[in-house]
Every structure is written in C-alpha cells, then in structure tokens.
Length: 571
Image (cartoon, rainbow, N blue to C red; front, side):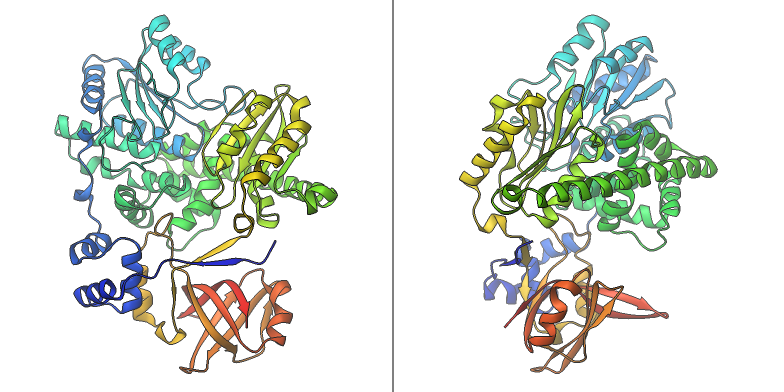
C-alpha cells in the first residue's frame, strides 16, 4: 500500500464561521465543520442537531404515490392476496420485513418472497412471478428492485393478471415498467425533494402515504424504524436529509427497544453497548447479508419478523453460522487472491488494476474479497468465479475513479454488466477472461490518475490538541449519526512529539502518548495495525503530524478521550 495522501476539505470563510459560532454558541472549530456541511444559520443548525420525524417530506410529492395507495387499499378491501417481493441483500430483506410486517398487523392475506441469489439472481425473476401466480397473488409490492424489470412486469400482467407496485431507488431506464405505480425518487420526472432513499426508505414512504390516506396512526409505522436504519447503514447511502431523520430515530429504537429479531442478532453477535451507524455496518449488516450469500435470504426475513425470542435466537444462531462460513470463505479467498497478485510480476508491479479468476471461489463473497484486495493493492479490482458455465464477477473501485465507465468500454467482451461508479457486477464467457484483463487494465491506465492510485485520508480541519475537551467531544458527537456525506470528523494536528516510549499492543497495534509542546496538551492515541509501519519511524523522528478521529475509552469505569489514528506523517 503506497503512503496515504491527506486531502483537506476547503476552509470555510472566517465571516461565516464566526457568525454561526456566535449564533449557536459553539467554538469556531465546531462551527467550521457545520459550515462545511452546508449549515450556516441558526435554524439549519437547530434542525441538524434536533432532527424530527415531522421533517419528513410529503410522500405524495412522489409520482404515482396516489395510484400506489389506491391500488393497495383496493387489494385490502377486496381481500386480494398481496405478495411483498424484495432483493436478497440487507436493503431488500429489511424492506420485506418492513412492508410485510406493517401490513400483517391488520391484514392477513399476505405472502413474501426473496429470490435465490444463485438460482434466480438479482431482481424480479420469472420463478418469483410463477410462484406468486401459484399462490393466487394479484398484487406484488416490489422493493429495492424492479425499476428495470419491464419484461417481467409485462409478463406478470399479461400471463397471470398480476399487478405490480414498484418501490425502488436505482437509476431507471428511459422507459419505465408498465406497473400500476413506479415509486422511485430517481425517476427523471420525479420532483421529490430527497433523492437518496434506500429501497427500504421508498417502502417506508408508501406506508407513510397509506397511513395518511387511511388515517391510521403514524406511530404504528414508527415501530419499524429500526429496520430503516439497518437498511440505511448497510446500503452506504448519504446520512443527510430524510435518511438522517430516519437513521436518528432508527438508532434510538434499535438501542432502546429493538424488535425481537435484531435484539437476538445483537446478543448472538456478543454486542452489548450502544449501536451507531458503524456498528450496524460491521455487526448487523454482514450477518443479515450472510443468509442470502451462503444459503437463502428468507432466513433473514424470518428473523426480522419473529415475535418469539426463543425462535428468534434460533434464527440468529443459524445466521451466525452462515456468517462464520462467509468469513471463512472471505479469509481463504483473500489469502489466495493476494498470493496470485504477489506471484505475478506484471500484476504486482506494473498493472493499474486487478482482475483475478478461480472457478472454485464462492460467488457470495467475491465483492468482499475485491474490497480486501484494494486494502493492500489500492486500484480498481474485479474478482471472478465460475457460475453456470460463465465467469461471474464483482468489481470495486477506488475513490474518484469511474469504475462503471471503464467496464462499459470493455462491453464487447462481456455478456452483461451493471452497477455504478464504485461497484459493479458482470458475466462473461470464461474464454474471454484473459482478453478482458488486458483490456480493462488498458482502459484503467488510460484514465486513472496517480492521485486516484493513492489512498486518501480526508481531513476536516487542522486543530490543536488543546482544543479537544469533553465539551468539544459532546457537541461534535451530536452531529451524529455519522455516515456518507456526514462522516465522523477527521482532524489533523501538526508538530507533535511523544511524551513516553510507544507501546505495542498484541504485536501490531500502537498506543502513544502525544505531547503538544506549544500548549502542553497530552492525549492518548491508538493506531490499529500501525506498529509494523510506524514504530521504527516514531523512534527516529522527534516531530510528526497525525490525522485522527476523537473517541471515548472506558476502562475500570473511567471514561477518557482518546484519538483513533488514521495516519502519521513525519517532519
């Protein structure tokens, strides 16, 4: 991994920082971070620090919402069988649990369905439609997929007389499916003010609209907000606007009174402290995802819908087994992938990209392995495996590089592909792999810059250690939930030295006592996995700079502030 590049966010104007600092009575560093996030006035700061569910937008601003609610009410009034259909990942399974779970509190003629990742693939499947027809379904509510399922939606209507309400958040084609209603904030004709909802979030808006039209108490829907935050965190969408409101109250529900399935999952994972967005991403998300990666996503939905704790624990233990199996595949495949790179002179030292194939790799974790490879070899990466006599791949990018565009230039070697700037999937004939590897690297080499091949640490502000105190941390923490476009702040402090000799923990982690000579401030810092790279350099360089986040550490019932190091640079 090359040395990291520090990228500093633009410094806001002094005038705007001073004005906001005085208006809300916070220090200038905190005011500067708020201005960086587009918050410049008292009212904006109040809404940011105190999000309210009343801030959610009118769901009827979304095209087709009235049609969707009318059709849903008609189905319920006529006693029709309704099927809730969702993708097999976290967003899809939480969406199904949200919509099915809410409707089942007052309506019984329901089914739910998640496609098999390996037999049916992503999105609406012919098998799913045929199963719906066998069950006598006449209305499908499709969540986190369906926006490009024109032929499947037409098939369902023409052959089986099944209507679709689509709740999706992916980019649509120019022609929309011929559904009763297509709810998607990314529709080109959609004036809805917030575009970054998850599939779960669009399902939530449908239920919000249903509550409004039927005069059901909206509080009954708010009982499902813990599912919303799991979706928001795991789908890596911006924690801004409506997502911030839903995530704020979702975390509150998750920490104070979670649904039985999530409570059981937390217990099985051994997680006992307060959850934040990062915990959801790394503790709950992978376990829910593991059901669909290793076996079938239905197990995750059963867990999320369970109202019996003993039953939920059984499901949670089963999912935990899937997750352990997933981690085993992940670890083995990552080792094999890195060995393949290191054993190939061109891949290790010349190529600007990584494309690897083994027919026995598990398809469910190839995306994770691509991300692991990027941690060591920071460049666009595609991991391929054999699936139905083809090579199926999952691609991941580095910051700032348009992965989808590069893959698109290699389209003649592919059978199909899809995705976005930072992640994509594809299939190709196995015999095309070598040609694709060379062509993809040629395209990447043509467009990628040296900066994009260097891992970046984005720094919010330069500050002094002396500015960090409990009040600073408390106010900064009120900027949470942290996540994309509202990340936990990263600070940089220059001209530091060590108060004591560095300590190495578990042979690879660093614990440092940082000393700021100018102010006399001393703070403890922890650098996970930094001992090998930095121990010798710290012992031979008196002065250095650090990039870090501020966190709390509780030991022997005593809580103190500590710095979580992102990188160290030397004078």
